[in-house]
Image 1 (cartoon, helix red, strand yellow):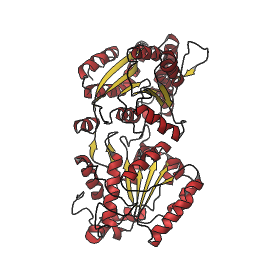
Image 2 (cartoon, helix red, strand yellow):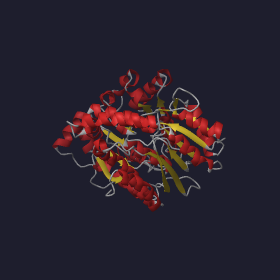
Image 3 (cartoon, one colour):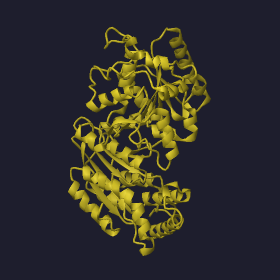
Image 4 (cartoon, one colour):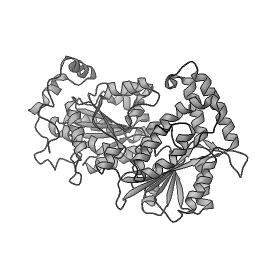
Length: 501
């Protein structure tokens, strides 16, 4: 299988040479790779244990093969912008395999934002014949193992080492102190790479590693142009082909789906709070049209988003929806991190707790929670119970927004529609992953109708609503029931004069 063209490893031009030299990767090594390195194994499908190979069960799709070729053609740098669920992990491991066979790659370093993604990557790496070191959590569990492995690489005792770590571990002294000992032939992969654009994380990325690959369905950082610029500067520009959701569905990488918007009104007290925040947003925008660069506006928008995400009437809408679906299974419930008005208590209750009580205690639906606080071992057991139908549903918050692979999900109920386009894209990708027996997915999306606050705030509301409504309409248009979904959203478009969208 030939994954890149004959002229991939051309001698870099002067600017490229300077960039490669600054990164610590010798220009000569890159220039000489064209035809000068023999394959590492005479039997391509039988490399030594721990060395990468593409398993016979995996056949790369055309867009994955093209992405591999374009990464090599970009001098070993680049960002893969592919729809969630379209196989970015497998594409990255295919690149590592090709590097091992062509230039004798020695180390694969994968950096993930969360612990559960480390274990997920480990499972996929094992399919590629790799034996990864999981460098996260307790330092004593992995530091000596990593030191020994790097020594064995340098001394020639081992051919290949795979290291999977977290963003939190990357910035720690334990791993930072060892990065200088990684050999020249190291590939760093940033998974969900948009997270690496924060100032502290960007300073921790190793400059001595020249081969770099970023993976993200949404590499653009929300309200952070500077962070986005750094990411693309460090890892390399977005490579073609960019795989959209429509592309992924058309090529069979994701399943078709039905989309049902559920429109929800705010309560009286929520409307008052919403009105106050909206007026403050309007005042803050009076002197600055570009709200994305206005910290005050951003903060107010986040407060209002939390209010919308925790709207109390979503519980009643959920009750009405699930009363007719108590015999269904493989359902995921996305919650916000705000609070809702509780009818049984004077105190506010967290939405995830209220949803869990409604589904479990009141309706008898077999559910459990799946959050960032759930221990890793327990998460794996919850995944198993969910996939086998022992649990009918999982109630999740945040931690399922990125990277988690539970393809058995057939239905999702989104109670907190995110204003962040990255979260919106990540969530829908979770739902559409293919799975045995899964012909089509179903998505119920609770959308809060902004209250009518009069002419004073109408124009502000229209401008702020445009971006959010664009995402809803895009998802509706790609659904198998596009006409039905569009009619449901027509009420929202009419209210704010956005019929031209």
